[in-house]
Image 1 (cartoon, rainbow, N blue to C red):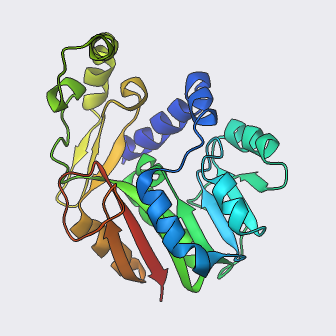
Image 2: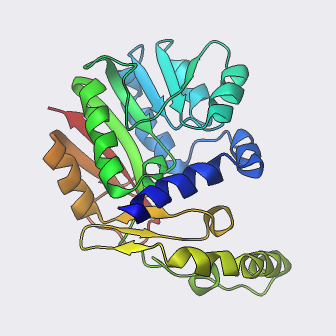
Length: 258
């Protein structure tokens, strides 16, 4: 339990760092699978009530505002909510925590997005709370879209240089950067968790600063089904429908409220 509490605290502290905030404020493009899935969903969710969780620097805000004026974004890092609110003054951006969406009544939203594996920053018990809260505020028949790290990924739990190696200047700089921060990785490894259902590991994200949740497609579908979601689909990082996948570092999911 203490490790799970630590995981949440470590991740929130990392996301609130000035360099991490600057990074996300500078990212404004949809990823390939997001383009595919949001284009597919656009006719259904156009002009609907949208909740965008973990907005960060507003990477998904611009697109979602283009299809609906009834948009709300939240982030549990106050600085993100503040800066993204300035960036998109027509949007409703709040500082809020997905584990307790008390500011929203039940059955409020038609579409909920939790992008960029944001849900993986939450330890298991709180992840289940978050999914239940999302289910509560989603309308019957509403759509939930999110991405999550893939435990079946072929490079799961490998250090960056164990995943690929190139003889070029750019990779050499990257290698030295990772090597410099490697002591932090070994400090964080003692807090890792491995169970039959999921793992929480320290990968290379943000200088080995995070403890991130990894889960297989099979286990994620069961997690969602147990909460009450139906019509669950999994997609690769290219936006292709999959039942199993060891090539995608993370998987995108679509689910509906029954």
